[in-house]
Length: 134
Image (cartoon, rainbow, N blue to C red; front, side, top):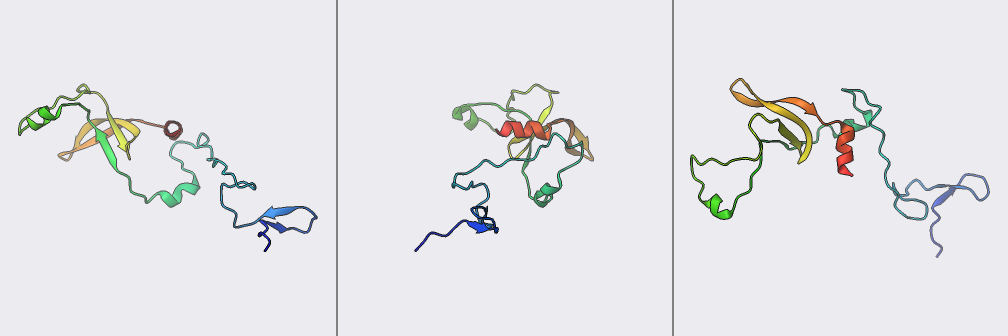
């Protein structure tokens, strides 16, 4: 039995179009081609590409990082109510805002209606965020 032809004849001898069911990202010889993302540099502030609308309702975990420290298990076991853990970040320094463990912004702590909040002082541009993924 002959193998199925991956082209459809368009009426011209020797020329054909790729079959509609060919996998996205696969070349005619079967090798995977890298996906080319659209250029985000042309986007103005506050604008978003229309092709991203379908992912806007995906939940993200947002984390605000006050600081970090390292300690031995022995020190951890000695902690109790009222213990103080010294962090590496100095007081008054900007905090990092992470979305799914990726830096997206920096900001300062504020209090709004007896609740903590973050005033954004710097937002990482989409281009910078994409560069960090490479």
